[in-house]
Image (cartoon, rainbow, N blue to C red):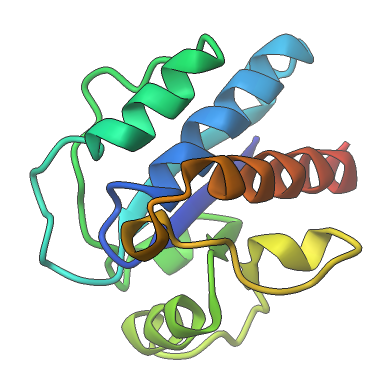
Length: 149
């Protein structure tokens, strides 16, 4: 079983979108038994809060529920628990590496590094553009899944 942790700053927008998009893709591919997927934050700011309402609505537009998801912070032990830790931007990667105490096994990657257009997943917290984030997340998750099949 491949265990994946998606990570962003607060775990209320980008990383839960990635978590539930990836779960949806895995389910539609009939691979649910082969994956364990979660998401987390690098900060403590949103711990215990639900997915940000506009992110929840964007997922729902595509028939994806994130019911029951609340933000949690990534821990050092997550590095051993997961096979891949996928951040949304360079700042996340720096903080993930710090929390993990390094990346000796090469498990920490940016989501869009799996695509032809490397870069950061658009942060809707600042832009309000959940369509751009949706495009980035779905493309990244599709390509990540292809790389793992």
